[in-house]
Image 1 (cartoon, rainbow, N blue to C red):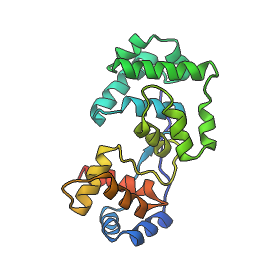
Image 2: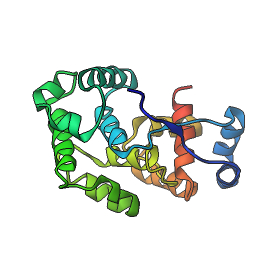
Image 3: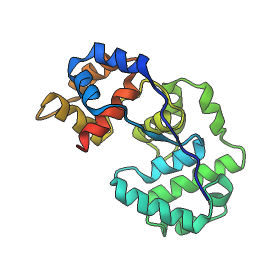
Length: 204
């Protein structure tokens, strides 16, 4: 099964605004050029992918994702709900993640949770809805906001790579929440594009 992907949509408006708002970031953006960030339009697939990716490396997440797709054939609420949490866990997930994924899929499959309704909610409302599930934290919800809903102003304090990119960009030895929020506010309302560049910088 091929999973539908696209790229985060942004252009000259966002680039010019960020370059005007922050000279250091602006210079890095000019040096790097346009960065394409893959997104998953399907909310369920994107959410499961974000849960898989919690607190592990990209390489490890891709390995688990591959095993999960091999086991299930396709990633849908039904294909997951009919499994047991143990089978899901056998793909390389922790018990907590496997239980969370199974509970989420079951509730969606039985019309107890309307994932598509998230499209109509504000960023903070989406975060509140998703973090009501045991096993879904703020970072996971923010990744869904950026990588599926394509919300324009997401800069996640919980993302280690974004913090690392910010520290490299500004030559900082450490980063506290207050300093992070100062930069995040500077990037607003185009924080998601700033995040895309901070990810790129973090891995340079």
